[in-house]
Amino acid sequence: MKRTFLSPGRMLMTALAAIALVLGLGATSASADGRLSPSGKSTLVPDYTQMLWSLVGSQSEEQIDRIAKSGHKVQLLVDSESGKILAAIDTENTITPFALTPLSPGCSTTSLCMWNSVPNGYIGTGSLSGTWSSVYKYATGDKIGTFRYNGLDWTHNPYTTVNLTTRETITYIARR
Image (tube, rainbow, N blue to C red; front, side, top):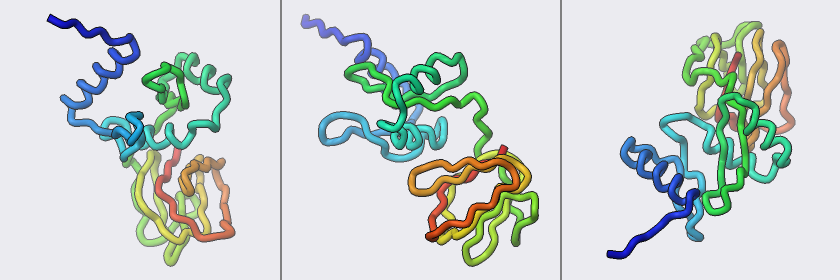
């Protein structure tokens, strides 16, 4: 009988992959070189996989360590071969997905709002993924607002209006 041993990192990744397979989760896929790459949204925790991949190379080791060791709820992207943390997100104040309510039609002075051919307003708190094309202006309303475009999240204080120099496609919004 032949025995095969896995390194601790490989053992952990194998166990996590088995759990994901049993639960039917598939947030990543293997690339041509055998490494993992983003392939969509996790059904367990929306958006974090893509957000983590977008942060690779932009955070210093000190920033990653501070987040990883904060004691908060965090999301980490770990190289399965080296064990090195490539990116980190502090999710302690994560807001519940899909809790925003459309204010239709139009916007109010206190709603999160995006302008393209029509004003798209949202009230309440939470986050929402979607596609809002040709947005030339957005506003936070009376709460902190986050808007994702060009792969980056832009978070602004209450009562902030941003006028864009080019029309953008917003793929995620949040209010808290």
